[in-house]
Length: 319
Image 1: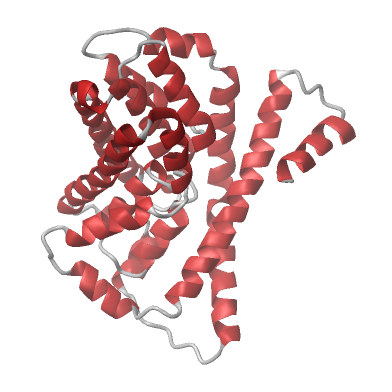
Image 2 (image 1 turned 90 degrees about the vertical axis):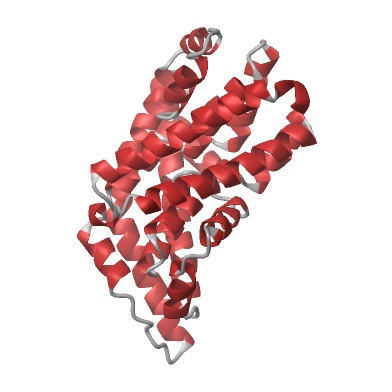
């Protein structure tokens, strides 16, 4: 419905030529910005509403205890069962930080959430079969698990923006006396977050739209079709800045695989697009310092590259 409304506005009211790249870029920006802002508002509202019921002090205490990484594993599993992309998972990530959950644990969720979800699993089952799908889901969860542990050990809380860090350090369970108070609290949280991130979102989606519409497919094919030990790092670095939906990413990976690209290389490219994106980086810059954004991207990128090599090594077993 939203896509039809955007098409009607641009092509029927404004009379833009739908065949031009400029029109496609404007369409992409308007549609994705409205969609993600709506998701941002709704998800912040839901997260805030649930937080109004959760005993945050107990949750923080439980997840803050050293349980041999169990808290990171559970956060990664939770990320796997939530249907969010790299951008729409950020509101819940922020909610976790504001609840006082350790940064490394919240990163375990943030890494896994866009890599594994039910939509992607269904598509992969249809294209790749259960072996590769199961291996991919397991790798996504463990990538989030290990990335969160590594980032947690680095003590990076000082790179959070002051208002976020302050909330994380001074968590107090607010007492609500009525449903109306919970509703008002959730609305205010949603409005505050949208107000803080909307400009970053527009910038990020705009750049993502330019990449999506103006980077030639031939250029991507030329890079991804190369062989050699550096193929996986090249395709991952190519995929990281890009932003796309599961419906588009999985068929691209299938097409690459069908062209003779090793399964690990194709999946690494898919994971790079799904798990990281320039719009996500821009949105994260709104809540943390650039150094932390770069460290997060570097750790996850390295993990995706290693995962790609592992899948290539196991290709004969998986197929």
